[in-house]
Length: 268
Image (tube, rainbow, N blue to C red; front, side):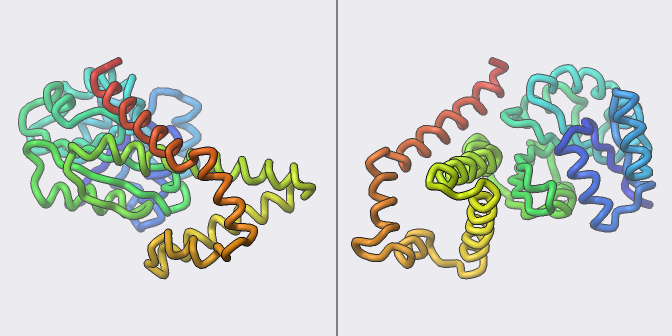
């Protein structure tokens, strides 16, 4: 018997997960989407051939329900789907800051809950997802979520107490890197390069550097030192970054993201 999976919430991340599962060979008949907007529903039906239902109906029919909604919307969505949930079902949350305890207190007993922190590179199958089980989630169910998220990237199991830090590092992380890329492109234009040239230089430098980190396994400090000749151009640039306390700014930024993740859990 095949497992029916419902994705409730068909925004960017919801569609990324849906398309990843389809590319990974999941049968469309085993997938359904919970989506209220009629135009969006038609779009998904035409693009993927997947059944699009009301949230409550999707929750009732599925074995695994994946909630891909904003933290602010979680209470309303849980109120909508909870009456349809049953013991033994698997409920997966991709909402930042929302704890498994919060969800478990709003759904029937013995519904297994798993918390996931994904990120947007899932759109190109290079996502990083951290997963944490709730209080009564079996190894088999956790493995199912692992397989689910592996369709769009890498997966790491972590204790739930680390989820706020993960949100700050990998969940929000793509935005920090895009911000750095944007800043480097602007610097290239300021230094006299055409924008298209600056953009290509920066993006390929980022992609190449990431590949070096992943494939060599070398510590980033060593890779940085390999580029930094004594008294050279890179050394001059890095000195300016240290003068402007960029390292400290990154730490402060990620602490702020972690604190916001905690605040979301408290409903503020």
